[in-house]
Image (cartoon, rainbow, N blue to C red; front, side, top):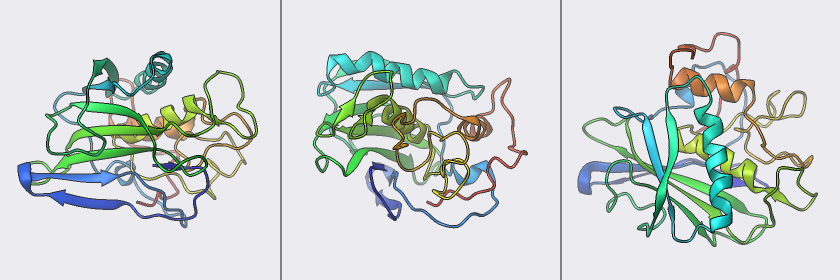
Length: 243
């Protein structure tokens, strides 16, 4: 979940006993820094088939689809083994539905959330409870259509939000990333490149336009591919992302 202005919010866990499915809503919680491993950011992951499709619901405007595909492709270009790819358009069954979806039936939605200036977008993950509780079953993303979005590749205006940046951020959550880098960390405080997996858009106007060093290291550590590290050993994750 991404909010334009946020101080604290806890992750919300819930369970639906039918079909033994659980869910997790990505949320914001800022806090102190602690050392940890990449598993703190990825308590659950996609398994078995790491080519994960997503579908545009009928609510997604056509002019956004190529834009969205470009953002998932940025994660796919990393060394991590996971791949998130667009797989057509369909009706969808509604954001946050864990019961009526089959495995890897993931949808994106364009809908009213809470109006301008609040929650920009949110991601909802369903996971297996009994057979494999660390395995993600399905994920959905919802973008707030009431925001003052900027769709271009140039810098956003002072009162605009980069849709590209928000879409890039939410695909991080779809990959299984829980929480965000601490707002006081080098990644998010402005002392270095502003990272995509910080909690709020960079208000300097450039948004989250690209994946930075620690975004990449964390993802690669969660899904090590042929070129990806199995551990992050350079201090990239020295700050705990609260869940």
